[in-house]
Image 1: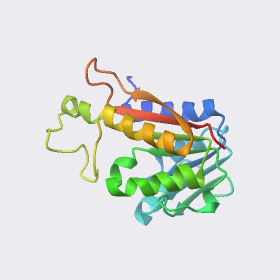
Image 2: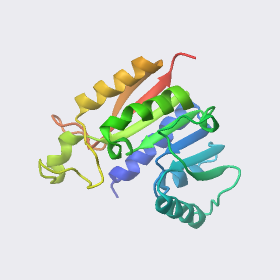
Image 3: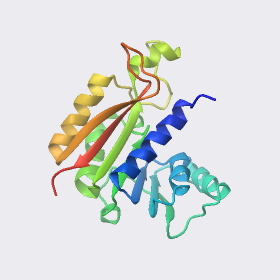
Image 4: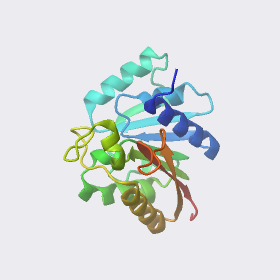
Length: 201
């Protein structure tokens, strides 16, 4: 059975985190908890914390963790908190993930998220995935619409890479890019990922 885009995204994120050596992970914008469950199933990860400002999403997340056999405790926790504000309690984690999250943030708020995550939390590794707008036509999405009504924007590969490289340069990180999903020769993959590695202490 072919791997779905969702499952491929999860696999790449989990494998990338393991390859980075990250054992303490923040899931920023954890939503209904799909990534938290995937991380919880892997004993490599010692501390897993999800943040979301939606209490409804966090309730779904807690149920998903319970259903999978991973109730909240010392290893796993979900918190009703913002990742757009610097908070010292979230410093010291090995990695942070924004999985299909930035496109839900109004563009004029992205600089706040950048400061909080890259300058405040400052993990060694940051992973960001987001839709590739160029592939919308392949998915049957009309040119005047976004893939999801809650998206504030969707970026082309060039736009995402330009933004991500600026974030890296401003905050002392290196960044590399990976497509997620089958790659169209001209339009790329449906989803795209930036992998940041901190190079400045």
